[in-house]
Length: 156
Image 1: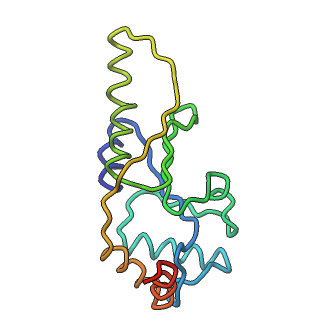
Image 2: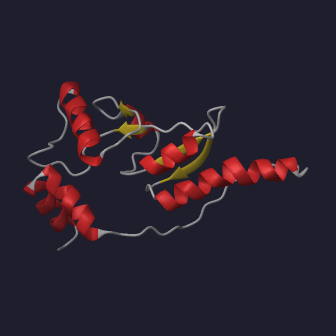
């Protein structure tokens, strides 16, 4: 996502990372009990994953996360008027980039060509590449408890 944010910043697109909670708490990164702890975890996330975008930290109870659907790894894109134009329950760089290209390049080109456009909603199933090894490395960052609980939940 850092690369996409950098590439589209030149076209006036802002990008933030909203840090909500630890999806798989463990010994190293447990469930948040204070805002100070949550800020420390967000800073560690920036360092470990080299997040270059601004990170906003949600309320301790996750008010913003709840308001926007509570999905574990979602992405929203808003237009300049604050209207949601893209919503995904899982962050997939290919999907996000295609959506940005559609709204920044294709839609304005159609308007310049004289098309009169009216908005409509689309819902479709997309597929993301799954890297199980990388996922488990991320779980291990949180601690053995996180790995154990996830494996149990998955029946592994």
